[in-house]
Image (cartoon, rainbow, N blue to C red; front, side, top):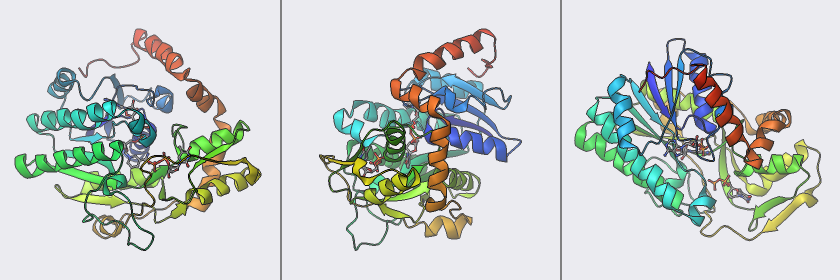
Length: 348
Ligand code: NAD
Ligand code: TYD
């Protein structure tokens, strides 16, 4: 399998690349990433020397580059992780969300169609379904799309566009919608890594509103295993929901982190709520379980302490990320490697 992964220098993409290269000897990955604030080559520094891995610096919305890349290579699959992914940033400025999540996906779909790519995996989110009341059943794949943030709207638009490329042009599109991920290499603007790293710095935990919003947590490796299953066995044109069946309020999550680190609840600081804050997400993953035999393996209460330990042991990683200095640090390392011809440049 020769696969183009977009956004592979981010949280889930980097975990996915590490996972598939270790699980499949005969998989080759080209990682195309724009290296936005969320893209960090340090996330893959252990993978970089693998001859089955190539990094290309670029934007999925750059039609010329994407055309060059797909003309010079035959890819069996494209897995599109590239996105602006943080709800709070989309409230501040939706522009990059429209450019990357919608226009970028459109460029990729067109190129995949023109070059006869055999699988197009659109990595999406449960946030496209909007919010659930406390008594409502979890979202199935048939729930209406009702996004409430600019981020969710841009992902819903990309999903709908991808759907049309299947129905109109026969492009073998697969769409996955996953719940909230946690795990190593998550950018510390998201709830769990933000709280862990704040704790390790002795800073307060900013909880939005009353802290009773509910998210359905899944370990990133369970998400990666589900994406692998969909890539290998999913039916084109279908949507697959992925979730950990682990609904927790934000306060429950934050208290678990405090308990793991033996810290007092007085660190919790309630701050003004996020505008339009979705109350509850929950995923019904019966379809992927029945159709592809996938089920989550990592239990939150067991694995949260492991993830906390990972952040304790990778202090330099997140300190560089929080300070923003990882961008210069890794840009320098990248230039040196390019000069030593460590990266193969024959892919474009
Ligand atoms: P992330 O923000 O950590 O990483 C995004 C990556 O995409 C970064 O490496 C960034 O540099 C890259 N990127 C951004 N714009 C780009 C562009 N125009 N061209 C090429 N690369 C670009 O995000 P993540 O949490 O790893 O999420 C990955 C995907 O999974 C996203 O599509 C997101 O919507 C989806 N998702 C995330 C979650 C979650 O809990 N984090 C849950 C469900 C679905
Ligand atoms: P987040 O990690 O941003 O993911 P999403 O909004 O995509 O679900 O937030 C998870 C939950 O945590 C969400 O209900 C908002 C809340 N939250 C806080 O209470 N404080 C924070 O500082 C952050 C970043 C999130």
